Image (tube, rainbow, N blue to C red; front, side):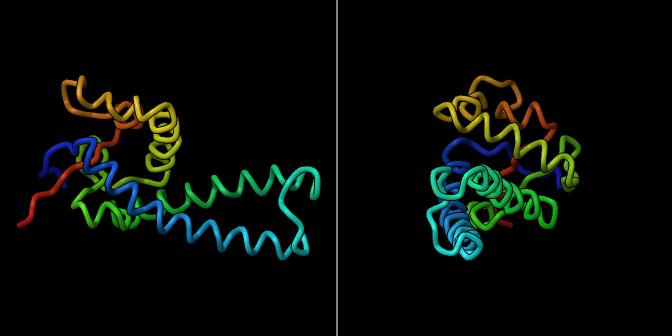
Length: 145
């Protein structure tokens, strides 16, 4: 898919808000399963020791799996479908597991400091966010056909 323009900040943020609702549900299920193993104890270092760090790493892995699996499978998350956004590589092809994972890792660092890495798209000559540029991917806004 090579047709479409580079998506702006507003659409990307709106898609992320949609996705955050589904991700919250996934994290609740993951937490419930983790609490089964701790027999209902809070997942803190005071109560479960070093297992709390494994739990926290698992939270990031659940979020990463959501994005990577969706980008590889269809190029879109649920939120991206609603806003007609599509993740592709620099040649307009579907993302591989490696490129999707790279995109997720770089996106975490782009969104965390007040979305400055995403706002970079307004100064980039190709309207790519910083994590788009670093991962060799892009988010296209595909108009209605």
